[in-house]
Length: 379
Image 1 (cartoon, helix red, strand yellow):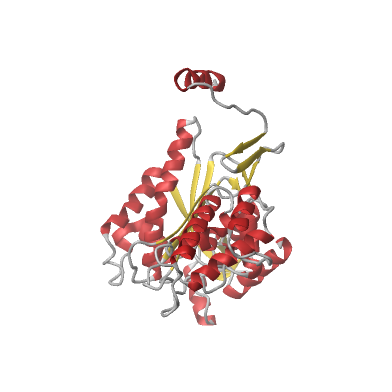
Image 2 (cartoon, helix red, strand yellow; image 1 turned 120 degrees about the horizontal axis):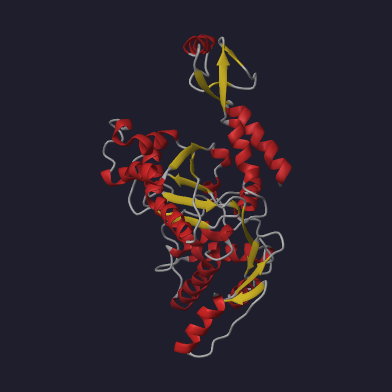
């Protein structure tokens, strides 16, 4: 089939270069189809070129692509001269090309720098230099993509509320089929939200089109999505998305009705919204400049160095439903999620649970301990 298509293209446009086999060079990317069914993508030479062309010598490396103050824009900082401003713009454009193809770990920093190319200042120059320092220390890193189950699509969406100077929020999202993040989003929201819940709803509204496109693309290739999961860490936003205006209070009724098309899409696309604790939210990587062990742990998941199931298996265990029989919890490690306070509250919870299924979850401190253990085991 491929040979026939190549011949038809050559009939109209002339002879073209064709490469076959497991390794390919294409537009600065080295693509390697591996024996275990995964594909690795790296741009080592392209990254090295971007570092070498930067006017300052990058002699040291950084542990992360950005500091915690990435989104801060200070007043009174001197703007770059015309020459350095053009270098800034050119270098950011190169990094944007890199991060959209294989280096998802710098996408958050690059997304911010793209908003600064019109009038960059000295602080922006330092932030750009930090990204190059990080790339220098991780120049051999590759994006690894694979599929555990073509019929199971798992999406993560999160939003960081009012993190930009103009008080706009930041959306992060990603889609995976088990190994690495194939489709990602990291962008500043185009309108101001009045609460974190509204920011989350806006984020899902912006990202859900990627989920629809992915499903339609696979169907055209002859595959069917049997499980379409959307993970979120804001339960108020989840209720609005699933119930529409029925879950709106006085504080959220002002949200533009166009965002309630999410409810319709969840039904027509067969998307299940699943709660994911913040500690395990992959999309959090794309909403803020994470640091330390958390950055490196989520980077491993996003870049495909660790399978997604190492993460989802933990929070699925944390949030699994428990059955209460005769007013006694089966597990001693969980408490009623709606009645986690005093003994009287727990008593009321037990009374309401007689003969019914009740959802349980680990308390906050226990979840943090579980996450800390997970990090120590993976990093």
